[in-house]
Each structure stands twice: as structure tokens, then as C-alpha cells.
Length: 281
Image (cartoon, rainbow, N blue to C red):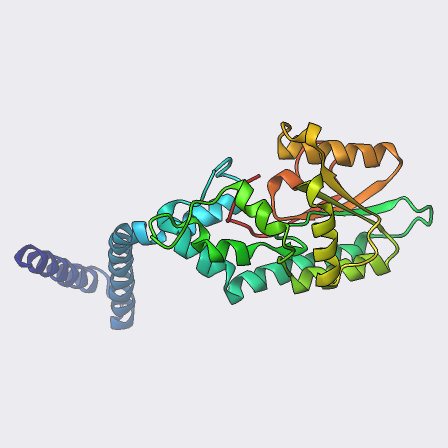
């Protein structure tokens, strides 16, 4: 406390000296000029204090920075959410901010369609959607497991097997803004292809879940067969898009919550990324 008081005294002393020098050396300096100078120095001082305070908040901001960098694709190949961030991710995925972010993706996609899309009329205009956390949400599953917070004694470690067991029950919920976007794209005459990392044995459950959520009228649902189990998600999805292009389809856009759905070869004219910090494929 004594050292802080001494620093404040020295700072105030320097202000007084600065004021006297300005007033004596330059008559053009009015007191309003001097007051503006003092205000600027106060702002600078508060900025320094904020920076110091920021150092103290680094740990508190860590999870927000982690989630942000997942969306930027700076953080890749993570197997799970950091234990200390599970609660933060859960709050975001259940928040109005998440819903607002999804709506913005839908709005920007719709704007692109309005401004850039023209139907050729040869039945070769196409659009690609992913399934999980694009058309339907796995948030209920992750919420049940506390988003992988293994520090929480109520939570079980997450794995792909438990997720697929849950998928087989067809309990994924609709993402409302994506349903509206799906219907808009369908109404414009594009063929809709749904390319998912889900395994083929979940086809019936996936179709039933999509129907129950309100999705109808897609051209083809493409799921991963057994031989493709050892291929990474990006390569698998790229290969499926390549097959569509080889059949003469023009891919106008892709919507997905994973970078593996958007990157690789045979991509579309535009890609639209939905937020999803829960897992990485």
C-alpha cells in the first residue's frame, strides 16, 4: 500500500510540474488545454491499470479464447474440451448468443443465395449440408454428459461409441434456423446432398430423426461405410463431394459445423461454418 501511495504521489507531482511548465513557457496554453492534457493522462493511467487487471483475468478469459480459436481453426485435432472449459462451452451452446450466431450464419447464407445464385435449369445445381450440429443438434447428449467435464463426479468420459448409441435413439433436436434455411434452399430448386461422418448402420435412425425434425426433400443422404472407417473425416467428405462434381453437379455451397465439412478438395463456391466447440472431426 505504501509503495502504491508513493507512486500516486510521484504521478501527481509530475502532473503539477507539467502544468507549471506549460503555463509558463507557452501563454497560448489555456487552462482548458491543460485540463485536456490531464484528462488524457488519466485515461492513459486507467489503460495501464486495465492492462494490469487483464493479466489477473487471463485465466478467466482462457476458455473464451480457447473457444474462439477453435472457430478460427487455430486449435485442431483436440480429443475433448479442456476440463476447466467444459462448463463454459456448455453455457455457450445453451445460450442465446449461440442461437444468434447460428441465425447470422443462416442470414448470410440466404443473402448469398439471393445475390449470387441463378438456377441453370439442368438439375445440376447442388448444395451440401452436414448433419450433426448443422441440421440437428447433439447438444442434449453433451449436456447429459456435462460436456465432458470429467472433474464433475456426475459425468462420464465421452467417446464415439456412447455418442453413436445415443444417435441410434433418434433424439437429436432440430436447429430451427437451419430448418428454415434448408427449406429455402430446397424451394430454389437445388439438389440437396447431406454428407455425414455418421456410419451407415445409423441410416434408419438418422432418416427418422431428420424426418421428425422436419427435414424432407433432400436428394441423397451419404453416410460412411465400413471401408471408410479408417479414412479421416476431411478426406472422406472431400471424396464424396468429388464424386458429385464428377457427376456434373455444381456445388454452390456447404453448411457444416466442422472444418472437415468445408475444407479439402472439391469444395463449393461458398462455405458457411456453424459454431461448434464441443468436438473436432
